[in-house]
Length: 108
Image (cartoon, rainbow, N blue to C red; front, side, top):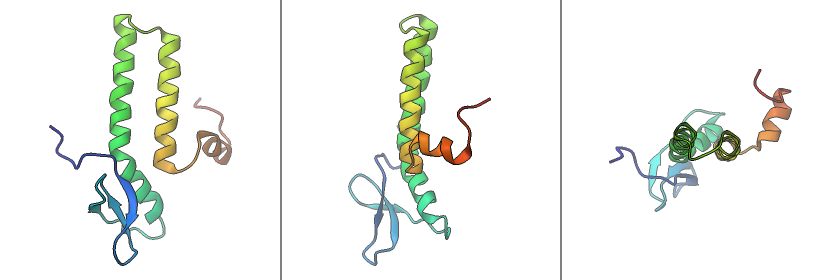
């Protein structure tokens, strides 16, 4: 059993309109305190359960290739989609926006 508050988490506000990380039932679970990065930090914290689930799924995809139930090409496509949507949920930016901002088209 998981020892953390189950996801989905999201960025919300408390009754004073201050930022608050909330669980799926809108119960506050964390307060982002680093200014001016609080919003980016809060988005990343809120994405943590989703990112954990995505990484678990990536390992399952890799296992599928290892045991022969998935082709390498299929697995690469699945991993790409899983990774890109996870990065988008954690940063609030598309992978295209991130690569344009860094000037890098891929990892070398």
